[in-house]
Length: 157
Ligand SMILES: CC(C)(COP(=O)(O)OP(=O)(O)OC[C@H]1O[C@@H](n2cnc3c(N)ncnc32)[C@H](O)[C@@H]1OP(=O)(O)O)[C@@H](O)C(=O)NCCC(=O)NCCS
Image 1 (cartoon, rainbow, N blue to C red):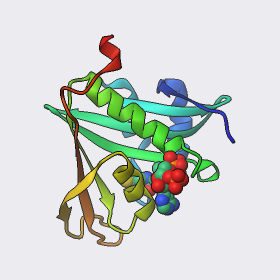
Image 2 (cartoon, helix red, strand yellow; image 1 turned 180 degrees about the vertical axis):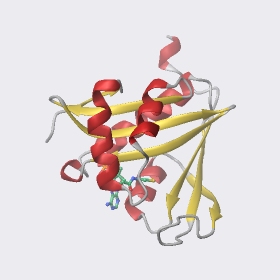
Image 3 (tube, protein in one colour; image 1 turned 90 degrees about the horizontal axis):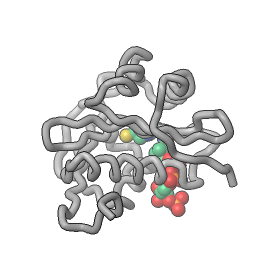
């Protein structure tokens, strides 16, 4: 089992994030956009680090009072060992920390693994964007998680 920890991303992680982004997605974010997600207050980006290597990451963006999960990806050699879950937990915790209780994301309709991961955290499909992805005209599912505002928040203890 790989040992890893989840930390807030900084500029030193950019190369590792970029490598995974380009390997995982047919329409990857540019390096400049990834850099912005590390530097801008609008975003929170977390990485899973094993030794000094980035093995996964996740990005959330604050949009008024909503949290948008923009990207979650794990190096192909480290999947199905809980890294994606740990990244999701960091993004959900961060949303709560920012006072954002409605969290949304878009996912390719065929991406059963990611959908299963999101459902594990309570996300449910509430809409569809038809032929959203330009590479293969695949539909995007719009998933939402509505957190309970009154739920115990360990950060306040
Ligand atoms: C989706 C992704 C982030 C999951 O990361 P991961 O580290 O493998 O996830 P975890 O090990 O934490 O998996 C947690 C649960 O999600 C579900 N899951 C994850 N991958 C799955 C798959 N390929 N098939 C079915 N269920 C899957 C399972 O319920 C899993 O629990 P289990 O392993 O106990 O059965 C990873 O597969 C990935 O990077 N894919 C490519 C990029 C991508 O598609 N990102 C999502 C974009 S919207």
